[in-house]
Length: 119
Image 1 (cartoon, rainbow, N blue to C red):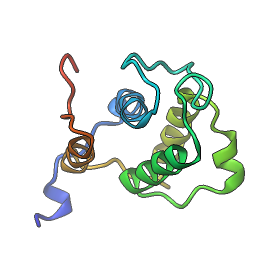
Image 2 (cartoon, one colour):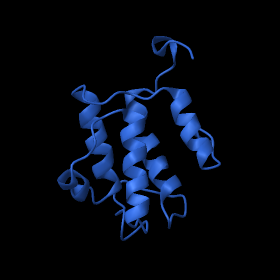
Image 3 (tube, rainbow, N blue to C red):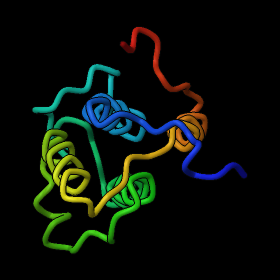
Image 4 (cartoon, rainbow, N blue to C red):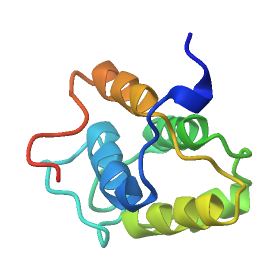
């Protein structure tokens, strides 16, 4: 495996698009048009197993501490996840993922990163 310092990292400005797309990949009920305002449970059909999968994936991808139950319960909509991850990256308690890590997760769902039309 190559030295982590030589791997291409996702840019911080890509975090919102990355997370919105990830939420859509894992969502039990998504038509592919996920927005920051959509609720995880009501709009996207998340249930306990899907929420756990999303939480573990985000924690692994951005390498931050396990979410407390209180924090996890406060994440009601897609924008809440984007805000939380952005805050952790900004304060140094989370790391930007390598492009290869993102690509591997997308491949797990039969998709590619970056998605078509991604700037």
